[in-house]
Image (tube, rainbow, N blue to C red):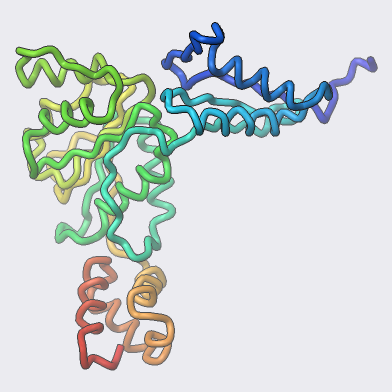
Length: 308
């Protein structure tokens, strides 16, 4: 009544589905599943107004966790007059993906690179992770795995991991769609190029991440890149630094501290601290490259090996 904004205002916006999806309808009750869940959650508030919207939201989320109808509600929550807090939530475990299992015992020393990669992919359609050493083993694939796992929630359309050294890339794309995406049925008789074009036009709604891991020949992946300016983001890992026309994240050796932290994880804290200077020397010997540390750790763990 004073004409001044209330400083404790809170706003919740609940959406029945993620962007581009259709809300499902319960034909028996002649209402949407989402509407039904919200009404039941509000009824559970026992007439209190305003209701506790955090509890309402959690009740709706839990309700959909138990429904196998592939509908993922989303909600936005802002607090304060300036809207300085905003969160969006849905269940990332239901996002289709084939991200390979991480082989890292511990992922260290790459937090800045993860954030830089996130920013590059926000600003560009295609981004490459390259190897400044040219020798391999710096962790390009592991960085791609860690990024895609951490930010899977940003790609509600799915994350498709492709191996150029495996079967034909087009076949990999189509098989991912058939296995993981609802209502994805390429017509019979299409050429492989036609099937790939079908992928771009009929992929499920939402932003998509495609990862081409260990690219050795740019020409090999060119026919399988999505249209520019589409909702598909592409991440490439490669040792190549020549002929690159895409923004890149050069990846090199770890810092001395990060390398020692990784070696400590691999061999054990007591063992490394017992011969700390020798352990530091081993890190330097392999030039602080992750794969070298794994190889050293494997050798030091052989039967009869007692020193670090």
